[in-house]
Amino acid sequence: MTNYIKSEFFRLLRNKWTYLFIAICSLLLISANIVLAAVNLTDSEFSYANTRFSLSLFFSDFPIVFLLCISVASIVFGNEHNNHTMKNSISYGIPRGYIYFGKLIVEIIYALIAFVIIAGLHIASAYLLLENSGTKDLLLLLYTFFVSLPLLLYALAVTNCFVFIIEGTGGAITAIIGLILAFPQISNYLGMKFIFFQKLSKILPWNLITNIGFDEKAYQLILPWEGTAGYYNYWIYGLLQMLLFTLIGFMIFRKKEIK
Amino acid sequence: MREVILKTKNLTKKYNNVSVVNNVNLELKQGEIYGLVGKNGAGKTTLLRLITGQAFATEGELSLFDATSEEELNRGRKRIGSIIEVPSFYSYMTATQNLEYYRIQRGIPGKHCVGEVLEEVGLSSAGNKKYKTFSLGMKQRLGLALALMNKPDLLLLDEPINGLDPFGIVEIRNLLLKLNQEENITILISSHILSELSNLVTYYGFIDNGKMVKQIAHEDLTKECNKYLELKVDKVETMTALLETKLGCTSYKVTPDYSIHIYEYLDQPSKITELAVLGGVGLNSIIVKDINLESYFIQLVGGNSND
Image (cartoon, rainbow over all chains, first blue to last red; front, side):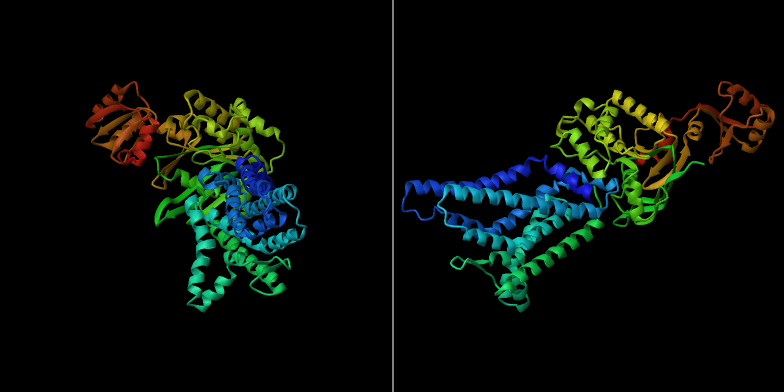
């Protein structure tokens, strides 16, 4: 599998979207800091030109990071179905497991690198351009990242699953959005009537990530479960669902014919 | 005795209960160039996809280099180079980058092999061009370069001369012959351009509606495609006896419609006429006929049903 992963990185480094994705996300976040700094120059009463506000914008918008995982996995997958390139690997006898899990590993590594670069540039620009409110907000950002990580892995795994088993990009994206966004919403509505859906909706990753609250005075996260159980549950439910869709995707891909 | 490197036994592939490949038995020995001949939709590509693991057989067995289990078959596939349907690469990468990507993936040692195969297929000057700018002929050559990169023991080529100009066709044919003769690479090549196959293959397999209708060695096919005298007489047995006893002719055959095909005396049909008359055999017709590969194929699979 090492050779497969190496080759995927070779390809990824030669795809302009690998860089454009990071550049666009970084520029958007940096531009938010530039806007805050610019407004502060014209309005001395403006109270949001500080690192606290800038970082809180970032960690409170983690559902967007969750959704961006769909783009990350799609970039790494490289439109193999439309390019018909997967047949070259299969014909050479590369086991399907290497291809499926290799892609997922590369997606996770690329996502982490992209996150570190984007978050790093955002934090650096915030501390360079805005009033320094201390480092405690950084801690809150780290907590948010730590508790969201299994959910981000889930988003990558679901995307990987559907882009492997559904050949059309439109169909795959529809299925992904349906599962990670629409299904939790439907479960929420059904939960008003049925206990099963009430319980289910509580553990669906989209609901988990949108239900993260922040106590900005105590610099703590407010999760649906109190204490350390909150952290454990986020990891357990996130990883279990990630594992479930990884296995479902692989079982289907194993029997899927390649064109 | 030459090693059998590819063998299928009653290999069948069904889609929605319709057999696309139907009980195909095929045996490919080392050093052969096997021509898989069939109309569009006859099942050639599906058969190649089954061999390369892109599709799964509904029934039957596949053996590659004596391996039959899925894991062993994958190991065997590492000894194969293939172009199935159209060659496919990443459009945003250059020819060299595309080959390097697969070189890394396949764990082929030595970066130099990329340049070598590009040169072998006549693409050395196009190595730095992006794949999206390639013509169909260049894409075919790059596909062949990929197939050759791992120095395969078996080449599976699906319509490899599609899109090539006449010079390209000759060049690729010569390359395949060289690979077969100098490096003992076994080749399974599918095509519907029969004239091209006749310059290349040592064994033919004719496939129609998923069924292997005939397998025949090149020499035997050449004999069958030779010129012959078609004789229609009222006493077939008497005539064949006369041929053997009076003319010593043994190179003939009686067809199911009771015609006699004589492969000798092509320039002396009067001798045959005389023999029939003297022997008291009623002669209905005597015609010099010949059959080329195309006609042979059309006769075999039924020309009018071609899609």
